[in-house]
Length: 304
View 1 (cartoon, rainbow, N blue to C red):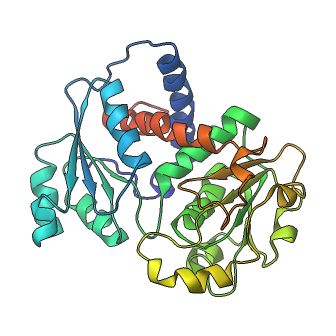
View 2 (cartoon, helix red, strand yellow):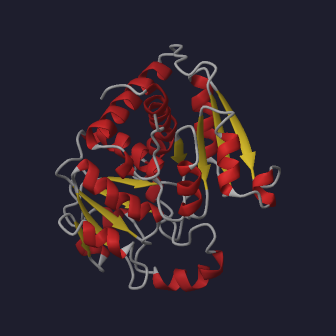
């Protein structure tokens, strides 16, 4: 039997994604109650990192420990992965020794190639194109604070990056409407937008885009690997900063998210993370629990 992977949100059906979110909420409750749940006892997660990380490494490593398993950190600096070994060879070898693999990479092709040759499930923990694990945490957070996101309006403000692409997939899988406010030249994947034209709108003006929205989301203006564009992007995104005043244009029950790290004074004002509508730190914590639920789904294959 071929292993199941999560390379984008489209790899799971809506019912399966719903199972993951409900399981994540339950696992979080058990964790807060200090209940022991060792469903992954003796299981090993291989963690392959090309890109630096805080939340991704801590959440996956802690999650495996909390479920009774073990996480193995593999960086390009101290393995053959950084010395030219073909991805295909690495996939065959590593997947013969661990139970599941997560990869944080620049190229999405690296993750898809690895998964194609892997004997075990592979999780995309971020590529330049998609960040599905963060969307699981975001969807869990909205559900905890406001209930179902189906039928709601979400506004993305900022770069049409991997997070924005994943929000487009989320709009399809979780049945919400998505407004995207990006400067010209920084729009998300054109094919993704076209394929979801029934629920995705590109609106250049942030104030227009956020009007009546139930969730506002943003990210850094300059993603990792694009630091040389910092000055150019700062100018292009000058009118796309999220502030409490901008949030005032949203629905009265709207909440704010950011996947972190945040650059105060750039994509958000200095006081935005402290605004009463911000759920950013709940969102960050939920990376831990949603990923635990995802790993259980991929390894234990429950029937949603």
